[in-house]
Length: 114
Image 1 (cartoon, rainbow, N blue to C red):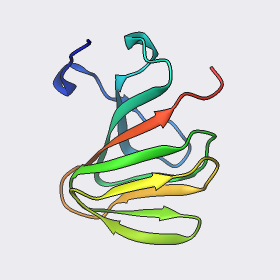
Image 2 (image 1 turned 90 degrees about the vertical axis):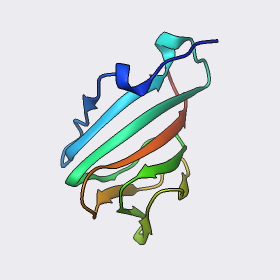
Image 3 (image 1 turned 120 degrees about the horizontal axis):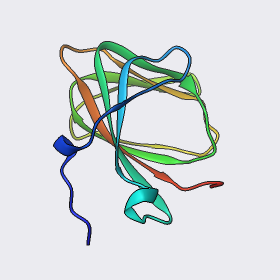
């Protein structure tokens, strides 16, 4: 068993073109020995966004705090604490912080092509 605390994991700024005020904490990934799924905590600062993008990994998101909007293939929905989302592989999507303070969520992805 591996135990950690998010307070001990440094956020890495999101570097995709158009990202603003977003960081990722890799909580469980390859260094922890995870062979199939990775878990990360995403922080989107007030006014920040993760722009429209797509990738081969499906992922599941669970909103911890804040308010935002998630878009997938042109459909938009408001998100807040307790909401969860599934984004299939290859689907264009984005997340925007629409509220005051941080929008934070857990995002789990399957390991693809390493």
